[in-house]
Image (cartoon, rainbow, N blue to C red):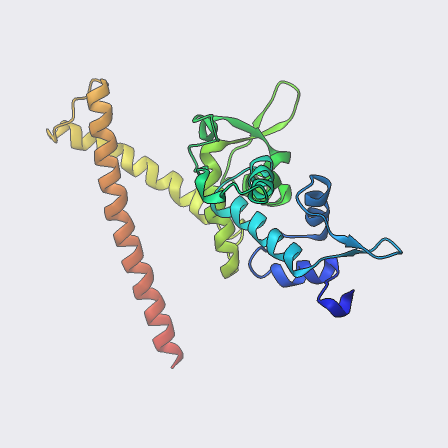
Length: 241
């Protein structure tokens, strides 16, 4: 069957890993165990994947990573296509969605569900926690939990790995954010005392005003940071010429 375009599990992983670095043989086997993949088998029991199987796997990984769909939903939708149900008719699950549960982003999720929910390995999320980028909670039964509100942050860190920037490299941002948050807190107090339109008493209205002021500062300081980094990089490359 290999002559007919079938691939072994190792070759499938090698083909898709440039797009999905977390993909592993064990994950492909896990997807098979969950009923999402149905590869052919040789008489000796080796898995062989057709081009259709590879395409289906690509769609599963894409829907996990870009549309935030859990595997159970992906399976139902892919199986539904065979019955004439359009995948496009089903809503994607964003960071603040979980199908019928709109509070998914505010829920705590067991860390061992990260491969299913985010398409990322447990070890990668633990590395982020060790670097101080995400903070794991502990359940009464001793399970490590991930805050759904950190999903966007985790995905951004995952994308940075394509550029060779890993959790250890990102530790500097934890230190920087601690310094900057103290600066912003002080700036908000000064802004309020100078009559910037923010009442010091914390009401719903003043909280909204503080939030707006903070958003403006984040945008402006982001522009300053980007300009400084770009200038330094341009200088470094010009010195290499």
